Figure 1 (tube, helix red, strand yellow):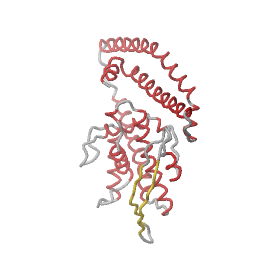
Figure 2 (cartoon, rainbow, N blue to C red):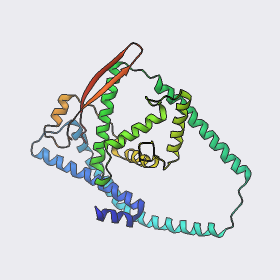
Figure 3 (tube, rainbow, N blue to C red):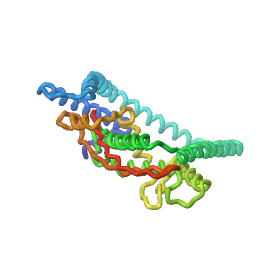
Figure 4 (cartoon, rainbow, N blue to C red):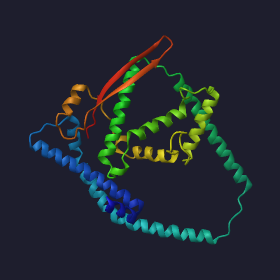
Length: 293
């Protein structure tokens, strides 16, 4: 791990990205090889594993292509760095130009328009969330899907990330969900009016967009910028481009019986409370999920 980190520093961000991508593809290739060995030993595989086996040629081709690009990219990066240095030297040698007041006014106008767009969009999201009433069945299905999505997100990160010290955790997903709630809803225990609560939502949105180093909440040490890095990590993972499949309990049990590629089955009990105009409903949702790759 230390050698990999040292190599990343030496290679720079571009080559480090290429190297990390190659390592991720090789991991997938090794998993496919292990699946093929399992098949040779007479072990059954599921449909998702069969689909994974079909990707072997494309993975081999991708590894080969990235290996071929690595050296040319290294040369191009050096040239780009030298060009950037030359441009910087030229720009610093030129006298500083006085900014046109009209240009400043234009920038201020654009910033004001940007703020208006954010305000207008959050109004819809805020009241859309406020007035969203689902049936008990729809609410239960939503909870099952969200639990499944959390498990798949963490599983993909665990399988594809080479850095064991930078893995996503349940706490990261909780914080992303919490900040998402800050952007579109009034806290349940809040005495703020809708007007003041919506203004708080707008403030959170602007801090998020500006990648602020302020904590996301009074009881949290995590900043907007740090949480943005976690979300970017999710957006860059295979989870973002793969559609997880909900499984029935029987399928989950079969997947957990020893087939390669199936991860541990988790059982979660989630208290669900639905508040409506007629009455209150409360139930416990028990779900099982699994992610195969």
